[in-house]
Image (cartoon, rainbow, N blue to C red; front, side):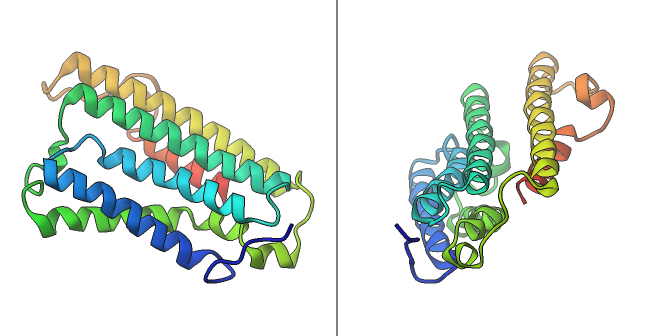
Length: 205
């Protein structure tokens, strides 16, 4: 069975339209009910949706590289959205939206930014799963780039996951006393969660 061609040969249009619709759906809920708890969850799960969608359309969905890369972004996004949902349920609200929650255009601006963040960061997986790449052919999985990417992803995933928990526990213990987190990975670098994020994205690409 060949690839499913939808709107264009790189799945750019369909993934963009799906992302816009998905984010606007959650924006409508968030703005109507002044509800912060689904904002980051909507961002993270959107990555999973696009990876599942493009892999299911792909002619190369049985290729190890397509499956591995798609599963990587799904695992990263599911972990991130799950953690952020847990954190907001514990804290109750997101301070980032205190000056935007009641302002339609300001609040929508954040969601538009989130649309482009999701769509842009999903492009490596979207394009890899696209018909155009399938037509050009790919080397078998296991090249040096595949191995390096896997190692980077695993290191970044662990660093980001662990440092998120370390910072959450530190903030829970210290509250708003102004203390600077210096435990675990934070003893080595100021932003290990962002460092992990960078490694994850490079690994996927």
